[in-house]
Structure formats: structure tokens, C-alpha cells
Amino acid sequence: MTLIAGMVISIPLFAHGVDDATKTFLAGNEGVSIIPFLYIGAKHMVTGYDHLLFLVGVIFFLYRSKDVLIYVSFFTLGHSLTLLFGVLNDTHVNAYLIDAIIGLSIVYKGFDNLGGFKRVFGFQPNTKAAVLIFGLFHGFGLATKLQEFKLSSDGLVENILAFNVGVEIGQFVALLFILLAINYWRRFDSFLRFSTMTNTLLMSGGLMLVGYQMTGYFVG
Image (tube, rainbow, N blue to C red):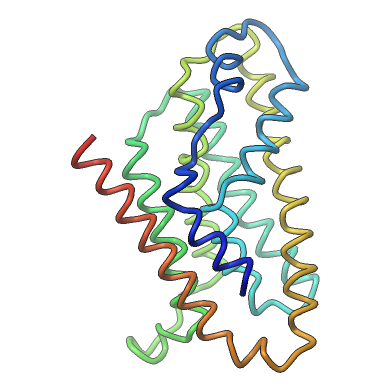
């Protein structure tokens, strides 16, 4: 629960930013740079609180490794497709709006984990399809960050593929620590006792992100 609370509190602070060194590199890079793009992709995912909050929601009640692998694979497929499509086809979406949708994906998952759809609407959406669809939006979110720097066409395909592989490496590392923390917590009665509070925090974090991004959209 401390992990969730810390990530929620950090939302207005980090705002999915890119550090100055990375900005300088991306703006001036020419040609194939596999290792730097691998590193940038991994770092972006590890520090990408919005992606991580969504993954926390996805795996929160998954107890079998097989299920974790299936759901994470759907998410990976979704964000890989739109990341590559968005950058390589120069398909632009508004960064504020796409990040607001990503915030909604966190709200959705927290609400789903609380059984909200069955209680409020009397039905349960297909959870795998939802993860895949939201993964597509997360991929466009990644694409918009790279498109801000107008990357050189020289070596673009190789660099974007390296960035995407880096994202997957970062996701694996982050997910490993998240799983270790959640599996340890599951040993205690407090896991189920505080599961409602935790998923409510997830929803609150998602709503904060939505509000932050929509403010930027209307004010920026």
C-alpha cells in the first residue's frame, strides 16, 4: 500500500517529464543509436508512474504466474503496436488527451478490481480485451513523448525498435519488484483487509492524472 500511495502522491511532481540530458540527446541524435535508445526506453518505463499504476491494478488480484504473463502480454502487445505505428507513421495525437485516457485506464482498473462493474452495471467487461485496448492508448502515450523531439529519419526504425525493447526491459524490471512486493504483502491478512483502500487509491491516482492532464489541455 505504501508503494501505491507513493506513486499516487508523485503524479503532479513528475508529470511524465524527460530530463535535460535525454532531451538534448533526442533532439540532436543522428543515425542508429541502439544502446542509448534501449536505456531511454527502459528508464521511461521504470519512471512512468502512469504505466506502472495501471500494471499494479492489472496484476493486483492475479495469483498465478500464468495469468500475470497472459495479461502483461496483452498490455505489451497493445503498447508496442501503437508506439511503433505512431512514431513510424508520424501519427500525432494530443499528448494531454492521450495521457488523460491513460489516467482513466487506471481509474477503470481500480474500479474493476473493486467489483464496481458487477455491482453498479450488472455485468463484467472482458478483462483481457480491456487491458489490450488500454495498452494501445499507453503506446500512443509513449509515442507522443518521442514525437516531441522530431527524431531524425536516419536510423529511425532501428532506434524506435531499440526504444521499444528498452520499454519491455524496464517493464520487466519494474514488474518484478511490484510482484515481489505484492506477493510478500499477500502473506498477511492486511492484503485483503486493505485491498479496497488500495484500489480506491489507484482510482484516486488515476483521477488526479486525468485532472492534471485536462488542466494542461485547456490552460496550456
